[in-house]
Structure formats: structure tokens, C-alpha cells
Length: 310
Image (cartoon, rainbow, N blue to C red):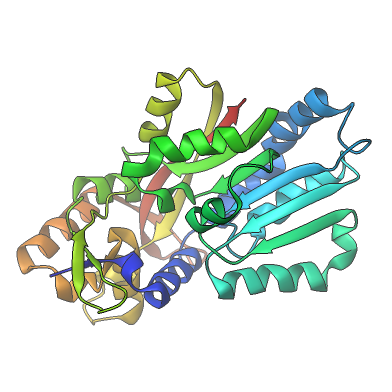
């Protein structure tokens, strides 16, 4: 029996870090922020709130699933050029990651003058349960973190996020599409891991699919409720060469856990399922040259960047 990767927080973090080491996600998102964030977010917020923000109140920013803060920091630097006072609330369940974020802020404190941070080492669900929706934000940033909500709770989560926004505010959401790469893989095989572990007994308990929320899910709900949004996209590449090496590599196994969102994927699924998944990956991968002109196998994922308004 296989379990969702999220059942083991340490393994999930290991898989996440391994994915980032072999992916250009951070680079691609960072390039978009450097190229588009000012015109598509900063200028809009400035136009809508210039009479109040920085004069009567700070710009209020909420980062959900901020990880080690790389993408949040790029956004804050651009916002800081327009707004003299910023209140940045960070919600991140991984203690290791939030400590990394805090360390960066401490080490480069001169870059964050005028920004007051509020740290919450907890899940989005726990944050909402504890604090409710009394505080409103001008910008909510969710860079590849909507997945933690789960597809069964997505509509309610999007309603909550809208309630958390100030009128004229923006939600910046980066999310996988369902027709390429990781999004297509996990949603083609949604039942690779179908049990959730009981945290008290460490035994399998309730049924839980490893299906990932994708941009089609999000946009269908936004359209249903006539919530305005604009979108961009980018393509990220993940080097999965290690997954096909003949020797049983640690890197390859951890990458497969992350790609399939399944704990110990190679040893926990049947041979038939393993072969079908690997065949799917082969059919959807590309071959690219690395810096040494050697071939590397890549899994390409198109991601949508949604700017959701209120």
C-alpha cells in the first residue's frame, strides 16, 4: 500500500529540496517577477491605493507557503520602491524553511527597512482557524502553495482568500496546469497513493487522493463566481535523468516521490503501476543539453500565473 508524500513531512521536505536542485522553477518564477511584477501588480496596487497606503496605513502583504522566502523577497523589493511602509505576514508550515527566511531577513536587514514582518510557523488552515479573516491584505502571494488546500476544499479556500483581500487587492497565484509535466502526471494517476496516515497511531486511515490542484480547477471556480483575473504562463524544466539510471540512485528515488507525490513510490507501488508511470514520464519528457553539452532528460511543466482581483 502506498501513502501520499505529505504523510511524511521530512520526506516531503527532502523531495521538495531535491526538486528545486534539479529544476529551474526558482529561476523561472524569479524572471517573471523581475519582468512583469511591477506592471501587473505593483502599479495596479499603487493606482488603486496611492491615497491611503504609505500615508494612512502600510501596504499589507500575506505570503502563504512562502518556503525560504526567495520569491516573497523579490516581490517585497519591488513593492518597497513604491510603498514606504509594508506589513508582511508570512505563513509557512516548515520550521526549517521559515528559519531560513528569517535568517535572510536578519542577514540583509538593510534591504528590508520599512518592512515589518509577522511570522506564523503553521499551515494556512491553522492560520485561518486561529486568526479568522479580520485582517485584510492588499496582496496575497501563493507561489505553488495552493496545492496544500486540496481539491475538495478549493472553492471554500478561494472564497476565504477573496474575503482576506482589501477591495482593489490582488492575489498572485502560481499553479501547475493539468496538461503538461507534473500536473498531468499526478492527475493521470490520481490514485497512486490513496490513504492518509493517522498521526496518532501511524496507521493508514482515511482515503485521500494524491491529485494536485491545477490551474483549470482554480479558473473554473473563478469563472463560476465571476471573479476577475488575468494570467501569464511560464515553462519550468526538471532534470529527471537520475530517475532512469540503472543503479538504484537516492536522487532518482527522491525525485520520483516528488513527481508522483507518493511516499517511497518505487517500492510501495506494484510493478505494473511503476512501469505505467515510468512509461508515461518517458512519453512526456524531452532531451536537452546541459552546460557540458551532455544530454539530460527533462520533464517540462507549464505553469499559470494568475492575478486575481477584488
